[in-house]
Image 1 (cartoon, rainbow over the protein chains, first blue to last red):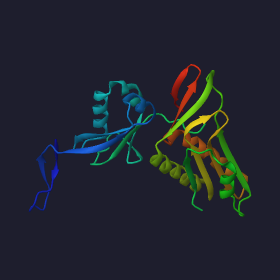
Image 2 (image 1 turned 135 degrees about the vertical axis):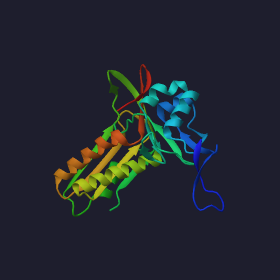
Image 3 (image 1 turned 90 degrees about the horizontal axis):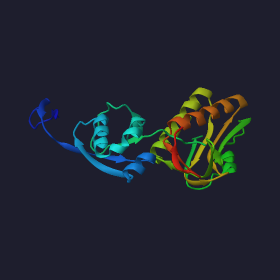
Image 4 (image 1 turned 60 degrees about the vertical axis):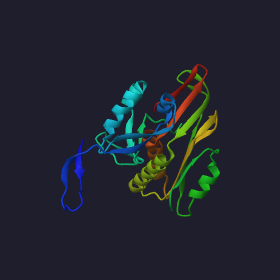
Length: 103
Length: 137
């Protein structure tokens, strides 16, 4: 994985190759929670992972999520975001299936 | 006035919400109350189970109210949504809008309930005679 690292004694940023990981929190609601049978879990993903990478990872782990994930949108830290959003350590990620509030 | 946003397990209190939103400068109050009904798509419904992503729902509702306030110059608004198990005849959602004149109150209330259904992370599970299912839309 490529990324930028600020090294000691150097003023600029240099491109390096590293394999740091970070942790993100996934919360599951409604039909997704029923399928994975838990309401949250922490996932270890590479630094600079995108929402799209997390989708791929979850579908490998829980193939039965496929149909509902196709109809779900992404939220990070309580806001709707596009799939090309980059994640940061400690982010809370939720895939939101079609909502049905009201009456 | 800060808008009132209530997400609760407890039965909703319409009178208290109307009271909280009423203001001497407002000549009209519109209340929308969503009720659990006993049938859906030809099925007999036993009860509903609402689930909410609370932190995000609160934020989304605040955003919808802010949009409505900007569009109709309304000041006094309350949105309450109940979650957990709800029986037939109970209120799942109550929206109260008070404005100087009636037309803004009707329009803003309609806008808030329609937008809420689309964007606020709240889900409804229908428990009916022939099984249970999460309802979309």
